[in-house]
Image 1 (spheres, helix red, strand yellow):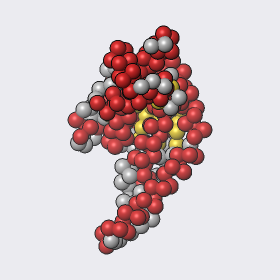
Image 2 (cartoon, rainbow, N blue to C red; image 1 turned 180 degrees about the vertical axis):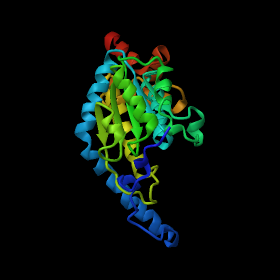
Image 3 (cartoon, rainbow, N blue to C red; image 1 turned 90 degrees about the vertical axis):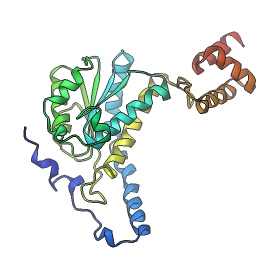
Image 4 (spheres, helix red, strand yellow; image 1 turned 45 degrees about the vertical axis):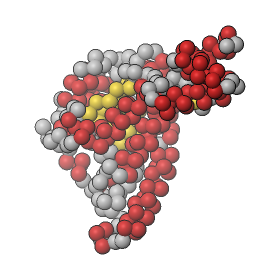
Length: 279
C-alpha cells in the first residue's frame, strides 16, 4: 500500500520549516519562551474553526441522544489523544461505552510506535467494525497531517455505510477533510521543531477533543449548573467533591451530604431525591 506522498510534504503547513533555527545553541530560557510563544497561537487557530466545530458537535449530539456512540479514529499522537479523551468520559461523566477510541496498531501503539500502521488502508474500517459500528454512530478522524491513509480510508468506508463522519486536522484542504461530512480544519502552522506535530498540532487536537466531548456531555444532561453530577465516585477526592456539590446545591450540612451520598451513591439521584422528599 502506498502512503500519500503529500503527508511529509512542505506543502502542508505542519511540515513547513520552523520559524526558529539553531535550537541546540539557544539557552533553556529562550527555548521555553519560544515554545510558549508558539503555543499562544493555538487557541486562536482553534477559534477560527468554531463554526465547523459547532456543526460537527450538533451532529454528534443528535446521534448520542438517540442511542448512538462517538468513535475517534487516529494514528500516532492523534490516536493517543483520542484514547485519552475517550478514557476520561466514564469517570468524569459516568458514561461508559459512549465514546470509543480506535488507534492504528491497536493497544501496542498506545505506548510505542507500530511500523507502517498508519499507512494501512484497510485496517481502519476493520477496527471500527470490531465494535459493531452502525449508522446510529458517528466517526471522527483525528489526523494532524490530514492525509493519514488509515484514517482517510476508514472515513470513506463509514460514508459508504451511511455513518456520519467528521475530522480534526491541522492543515487545510486535506484528503481526510474531503473524506468526511463535517471537517474541522485548524491550521496551526509550522512547529517549533520542524514536523514535530505532537506540539502545536497535538495541542490543538487536545483542545478540540475537550470541546467536543464536554459540549456533548453537557447537552446530554451530564452537567448541572457547572457541576459534574454523574461522575463516578471512584476515589476519596471525587467523593469529597461530590459532598461539596451536594452542600452547595442543596444548602445542607456536610454530614447530611455524606449521609445522602452513602444512600444514593450518585450525585444527580441524591439531588433529585432530596428535592423530591426534602431529606
